[in-house]
Image 1: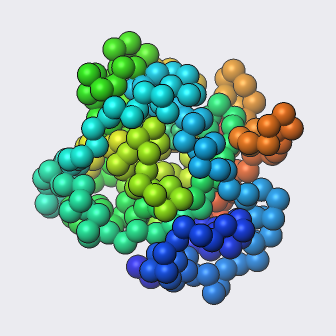
Image 2 (image 1 turned 45 degrees about the vertical axis):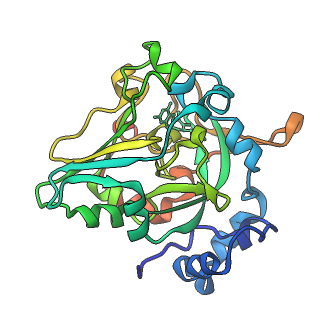
Length: 302
Ligand code: MTE
């Protein structure tokens, strides 16, 4: 794992907490994140806006419609989800298609901490200390074939444990997709934990996608299927309302949602005095990802 990203903020930038990381994780994180060479930009940006959201905020204010559409429904209802055993079926244009056991995947992957901004299309945001591994490493394990251009993802659909799926809020199962170069980008991770603990069910246990420069709905939870495709895969919110939700869904303060502005966001936390702050292009990851979209009209490809 040679490549790492200086705008991947470290705990040292974001917060005074140190406690939960064991030494091995910390060392892996520091090596991985290139702490020694951490650019001033990240450190400076962190002063105002990189205070971590608390465990309570991250795990109680959720979107996981399989468990209900209220922000507190996932925390209330997801406890009943069985996440052991868990496997991910990886197929399509790969050399080694198959059903991969989650524990086997974990044993092959390097788990790191990644502190990312998280911006929901509903114009709220958090700063979240994820633990996880790069999606690129998982795709390498399966062996991506030449013809693959996209990666499709699917969430578990188990109505007996997911009360929200008894209602046709969207066309279940929840599905998402990325272009292959987006999926292979080092910022794109499969998260398996939060604050050094296993991912709570309401946040997408046991593994969920995190793409920090895109609106949160791209970060599909509780993934059971990953398929490499030649064609752009369908995505849940685009199927539900194509005018409001495109395939790309990159965070962009200059392209409003048809029903609200995307210029600013409300940082969760802070109680009555919750801060509104300007939204950053690509959610602050412009230096890392803008080249992926060179020559593309971001208003057309929303
Ligand atoms: N994945 C599934 N399967 N179902 C969902 O309803 N909601 C999305 C995304 N992934 C969702 C999902 C949305 S809209 C957001 S903002 C994030 O999950 C929320 O992640 P969090 O609850 O961990 O903050």
